[in-house]
Amino acid sequence: MNIELFTDLIKDDRGNYYVAVQKEDKELTLVNALLERSYVELLEFNEDFKKKYTEYEHQFIGRIAMDKVRHDVVYALKEDGHGRLYELGEVIRLYRVTFIDMIEFYRNPRTVHGS
Image (cartoon, rainbow, N blue to C red; front, side, top):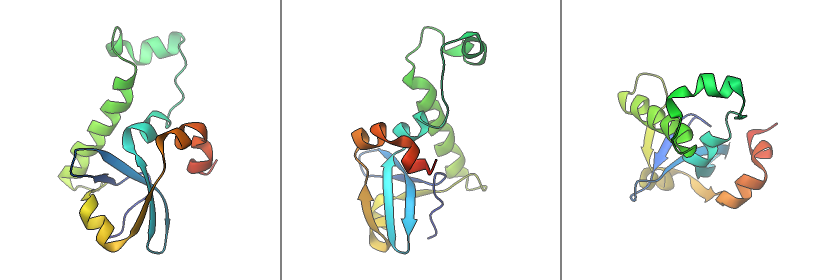
């Protein structure tokens, strides 16, 4: 099992998805995938935003990030090179796993992404 950072998804037994944001030897750091995907793209409420996301008009803004996670899950299940999906139990058997608290990631997303 070779987990690819920011690409592969890890699912726990409650249906939560995580993405690995750091890996050193057999240590893996995970954060909630919805939270991580919500920081991938800067969204500004302007005319370009309205054009790009017109299908989301009158929707919850979190739906954009959730649709990205859903897309990633669908492709990971196809196992066609667009990421893989692992069960958290399997990952814990091979890696020492730590989780980034959502609030800490929220405060410092750029340091996690290496910017």
